[in-house]
Length: 257
Ligand SMILES: [Zn+2]
Ligand SMILES: [Zn+2]
Image (cartoon, rainbow, N blue to C red; front, side, top):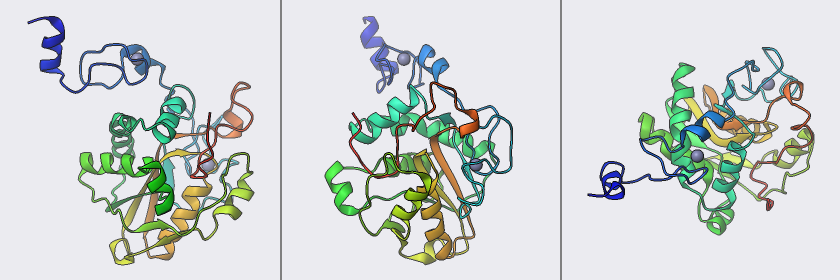
């Protein structure tokens, strides 16, 4: 038996690193170099939104007096390369495997925070948009998370009522206006009185999470926790290289090249 056959026998699903395509052994989706290079969000953070800050604060500048519909948000990674690269591939380039690759990190963060959620939801896209793309990356992440934790996934509760403008280049305030009232809840009995976990790929300004959480609250959710793979650091913690408007998210769906 040659080495390749041997490896395929023991590690049938994963032979190369998802990030650099180098061959790997073991059950991590990433090689050791890439694992070491992942920008972990393990320094000072804002207690509320979980983004990196220059010093631990209850509310950072990004969420003071805003983003208050959700109770707490956390993300294992910073929205910086190579995680930002992977999330863009997941979102725009059909690289669905990154949802499975990042799910264990979401689970780890969830457990470390001792959250006890009863239901998992995800940031929805309009049916038209999802059909065009073929999938919703937030749903893929939520599915993978739910499979690993056994917390039931509610696929048909939170929905997007209408298409919204691309959010790229918008200020936080403009994003709130753009998204305001664009999310709704069906079958509210599924979440009424429950602790709900909202899963998404990235927290940028927090406007999307806020608007989803507001809809969940209106429908009776007791508590809304937000879990994203990555978050954009608060202004106080951005380096020169990162300053400027980071590659943007929420479901605006502008083409990123
Ligand atoms: Zn690698
Ligand atoms: Zn904050």
